[in-house]
Length: 200
Ligand code: ATP
Image 1: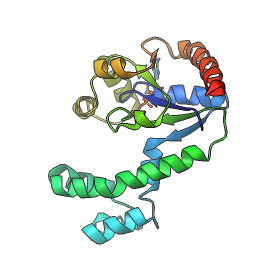
Image 2: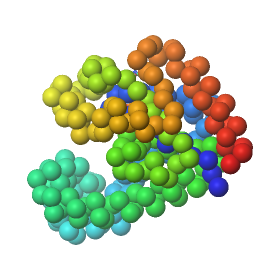
Image 3: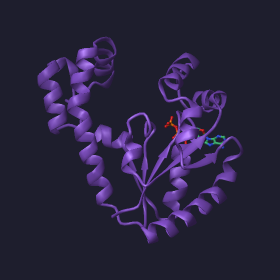
């Protein structure tokens, strides 16, 4: 049985930054967002089903999924959202479990922005939250991405509230300080995870 850490945090909190530090220590990562893209890649059963349900308008010229078209449909039509979720969620779960099972580091990290929201915390041994204030989330996301503050606020409010995630997480990395402060925090957790994965 593999020891699994679920790494989460809101938009712009520093998940990728922290995950990369674990990767530098030799820990393998599975990224829930990448898995969610994998199951609708060209040639997958996921994409074929979506194309036969919604028609060719849901595809780009090159045959890939037109994500903004799908987002639009899902946003406006609850029934279609339920259909799409019913199709993709089991596929995502299976593919995630396959990718996790294929890793060989002492423990594995599942990086998932919506770990608690999608109840993926039930799949892992321990949860790690990257925590910053909502105003820092906006600040850092706005300086990274070409988005408006309205778009960022909308995403922040669609994710579980900070307090709820803090209450649920087993471990928390406070990322409100400098990036350079992260490394020693990651190493301290890494040493614990190695110990616990050995005993599990
Ligand atoms: P998302 O969920 O939106 O993909 P994320 O949680 O993966 O975001 P990162 O991409 O790691 O977050 O970090 C968001 C931005 O903030 C990046 O540009 C990153 O370089 C920067 N950043 C991360 N930590 C800090 C920090 N402590 N101080 C300043 N900037 C930081």
